[in-house]
Image 1 (cartoon, helix red, strand yellow):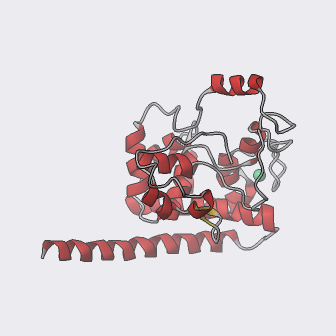
Image 2 (spheres, rainbow, N blue to C red; image 1 turned 45 degrees about the horizontal axis):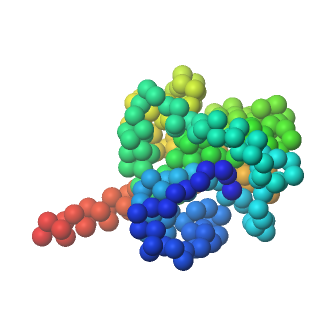
Image 3 (cartoon, rainbow, N blue to C red; image 1 turned 135 degrees about the vertical axis):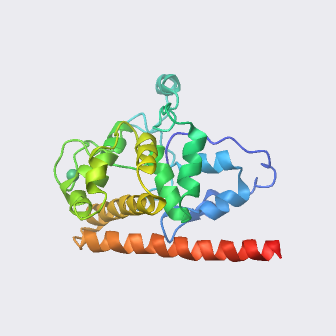
Length: 256
Ligand SMILES: [Zn+2]
């Protein structure tokens, strides 16, 4: 499940009987963001959200990912400690992390989309290149087009299978100029060059591209990706309208 150790938060005594299984949304194969927010402080919840979950639910077992045998050794532990944390967001210097946090979580209201974007920024989405670098697979080749390095950018944008979606998107020509050093920088740049609606649409389409990639790789589904992206865009738009009405109603109640 990744190698980051999550330290206990200030209210650890309250959650000492909590089991990891209670923090997972098994229906959607992802962390339960609401449960995390209930039991942990923000930093701890974010640290947990960045840990990738397997979509195949294998039986739990102890495994030290740096050794082929799966058994921990001091040598590999020391090597890992020397590496430290090296995620995209950690190495992002030109925009403050707090600003990025607000951008991802506040511009869009849909929690699952925000969670996807945050994982994107933290470099924890499991593309083949990410899995290869973690010694989980033998090659980083894209399973869909045969490119020898399926980075997350490749899977979401550069792959011909993803490009089918973007070629139909109004922001296609804009994205060509976006910086690609990291997703935090990418999102910052995009946000600075679009309206909130356009920004939301690009985020929704990235989410759809990742979903489509999963459908193709794990289910062999070759459905219509443009239709899928359109549906994701509709979902985000509807949710934002719904959410703004609810919160406006609540604001009105509070001011009465
Ligand atoms: Zn590809």
